Image (tube, rainbow, N blue to C red):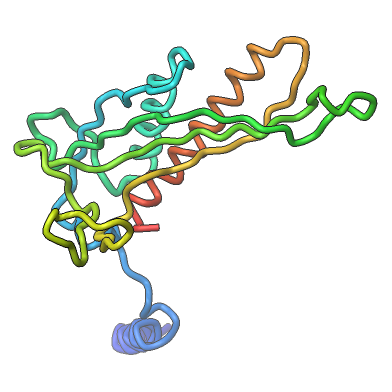
Amino acid sequence: MKSPLQLLAVSTLVALSCSFGGCAGYRLGDVKPSSYVGINTLFIPPFKNDTLEPRLSSLVTNAVLKEIQADGTYQVGNRSNADAILVGVIKDVKKSQLRANRQDTLQSQELILYLYVDFHLEDPQTGAIIGGTMPADSDKSGKTEGSEVILARQGRVVGQTIQFVDPNFQVTERNSLAVAAQDLATKLVGQLANGW
């Protein structure tokens, strides 16, 4: 049987080898972008829908809420206790042909569906954008085209999926929108939580 002193010495050696070895680069907890360090709770109102696709706002908002809760970097709260508000606008839904019918090239068999969302974080008290972009050098009007410093990853996210064309087009389109919304939510939360 080993004495308690021997067990203490072995456990100390294991702990030291882990800290000086391969375990030294890992960090517990979240790794938010630096401009989001003080933000722990987000309020997520329904995303605004600028498309003609019905019920897309609830589909995208629910996908983002589920992904934020699954990620765990931020808590979801109401407007009164939130550190920031996640504002999202669904800008466009685009489709393009991925594969055509062999006999008729104008008849699609597969489509690729893109879902575009613009997003940013706002301060709940002032409404000012948190992080965002700032002009690097501006002229007297205060705006310059293309010269801006990105403080945090916000802007546009694109979700995509493949849609198969079958006789029940509405069902496959709705299912494809749900898959594209989930892909978009994963990318959006990745930008908020990890900065990429």
